[in-house]
Length: 474
Image (cartoon, rainbow, N blue to C red; front, side, top):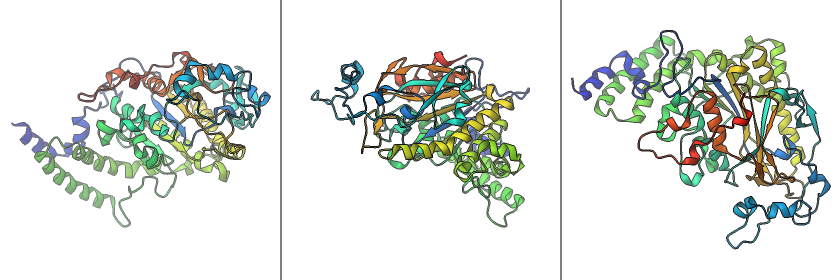
């Protein structure tokens, strides 16, 4: 039988609904029920990833990287402070900050003191700002990387952090889509890459931050909401439509898509659509149950902050993420917006942190007590840090030259600080890590080698692959 005729017959069978997955070689569950993952290179340390990303740029200087020198020399310019010459003469400054004429840019030159105190927490003595009291209690679970850097000084850094590429390079697969592409599913009734909390605007990469680019749309993130009545946007079959009626609609769509697939078997969008219709039907049954938090105890709700208006939104997303991990979702990406503190940094960050501190800490505590933290890698990240110098007298500007992220669980060595910025928090100077090192670390803990995820016809750069941050791995 010729290939076109075979695909035509195949598309009109029930298996045609899964044609997109078969043509892309997604790994299926083995007879023992363990999905092997067709790109997996070695034994994984983690099964799932929960990825928190703070849009706007969280200040490392008021979170996880204390710099007492900023208070001592507040109001001085960089070159007036004792540490300024070292910063201004560093190779990082000359490479990244000077313009083409060799004249330093302003970069908010008057040093601004840290707006919150720091304390040591846990057996490890990790320094965490006083604005994170709940997360500080989980200090022994955290591996803080204080030496991140990126290249985009504007909010397209949101796209760069998730794809490794500058926005001028065009769209490339996001980290979550690589995970979805590289590993088999653990639950056929749920998407393997879930997105909650919105995401970047069109100025900053838009859906590209959780898109799949040339991997195909079936590997992109599926948006869910915290609305218990409609957690899957546009996923409800409509008022008065029964399950059997919805099944009949999909049967008709299956036949029509099968005919179209025979006419153009190379159509990636069609393959994704065939897959998405069937997955959508299954998700309509499964997603509402996952996001229905009413079955959780009052104590669990309090742990996540569901009892407080200010923490309820993030608490619902974090608790929903735990329930997804329990049901085999591979990658849950959670956004939180509003961190762009060009002015009134103290008001902005104390408010924003209070909204996410308890839910994120509650998630770590809950995962640990349920025995899930060891197999779940939790990542907290942001697009860049904030400048050591003041903007608008009481804010900080964007700062890509040195900032902090942290990881927990999933084979990470907790109670660890890795890397460092200089005395003013300006540049990452010790164990520097570009954002794709975070990608490589996540993939490594999932048993994937980024270099095996090549797609014919799509050349990747050396920087795309990154290197696992071995200093934080157990």
